Image (cartoon, rainbow, N blue to C red; front, side):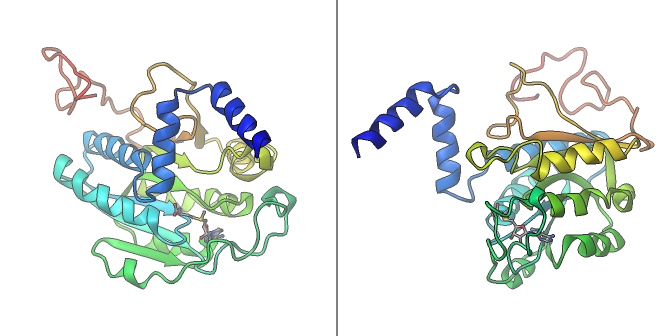
Length: 275
Ligand SMILES: C[S@@+](CC[C@H](N)C(=O)[O-])C[C@H]1O[C@@H](n2cnc3c(N)ncnc32)[C@H](O)[C@@H]1O
């Protein structure tokens, strides 16, 4: 017991981020529908989509499990719809039976196992307006979604845990092209689990690296760690931009000085409330 207390003290003293951030993270783990990262990523993505002239939008969560992420997105989308005057549909993708059989070493069979995160069914979620959970292997359901969706994808939350499943989605990006904006914010949930050796040789990071190697029209870009990173609490280091270079709006100017900017103009002093 004393030894464990000593380790705890070492962890607290050696922790490099402000402890208020640790507290914030703890609150998001304790209250599973409190997700400031989901809210702010969705908000900023919708703001940009609106600047590009799109107001019929959707958000994807890849990996739904018991639905807490989807429920938080439903809560936030209602607020953001009012705030920005846009429509947002919420789409989830999940097997329902938990993690699939894990065969590849890149899927970390020593850490994940088949059946983890088994869901109790998606009927309740599917009965909520503007929500649909595509049940089945994402390598198939992504095509069902691509064939039936009519809105632009504002942002994507990746939480499939496994290299193989993340790769299955990313290798289908071509099929989503017409639904994508020039740039799409992507949050990856499983980039860091150091003591379980989640790193760039496996999992999401490996799927991202391979995706970037295999594609030229699409790239997943990662911003540097920067002092100005204030917009996305709890998403630090986990946000990528999916660049869709061939998108006809890729070079369209939507900077802060554009006449229809939501956030600023030459004559207006920008504030933290705006941008
Ligand atoms: C960690 S859970 C998701 C948790 C959820 N995002 C949340 O925040 O509450 C991971 C989920 O990914 C799903 N999954 C993994 N591989 C999949 C695949 N190939 N197709 C569909 N779903 C998959 C599993 O069924 C599991 O429920």
